[in-house]
Length: 283
Image (cartoon, rainbow, N blue to C red):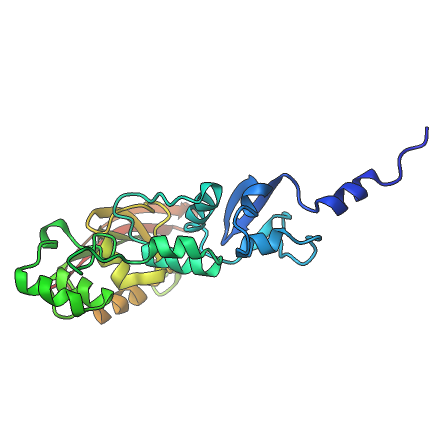
């Protein structure tokens, strides 16, 4: 029985993209409808997926369309494109970065929604500056001066410090291991650090470590809350110490515990495993 001549090719000319589209945004996978991606005319996603052919779009090794942007923040971009409304968690700490993503994806209405807003008294609203509750009531003189300050200067004034730096503690913890052979002069895999954990106030941790801080285990933590679930994207202790020192922190305490096990009974090689914490403080 004869088959129709390339029916799928005709369908592909009418719509080169499937109804359900898989995206890889900065390593995060999203699955959405094709109509969602083209819901905002003249946006970057609209331009990408309104083409007659998908050949020019980047793909990952599994065939998903790839966009080299912040994978965590893209969830809010996609939510906005579904119904053109902005809904963020309480005390959302990434408003400025999300505004930058909205500008990249050419969503001008979302950019306006994310812009810092001024109250009737010409002072920054809650969304313009993330400050601790106990520090959110400036005196009369400070309120009057906020009218002439920019957003960054206002945050520093509300923070209670002239340079915008607050006091507080940050604890660095790591689990390390090394193998020691029968000859004490021989070592292998010395001080192998699997992950460096960061504990402390969210705002301080982000100030010190910036983009090197991995927030994937606690992504929506408000800036005035504390967390013990952050860790660093690198595994060099000295690099962490340098960043803390540059931010004005000083080590005030440390502690460590260790255990020993035999790696090979015949060679008497021992594996030492330790957990160490360093406490840093800034006045």
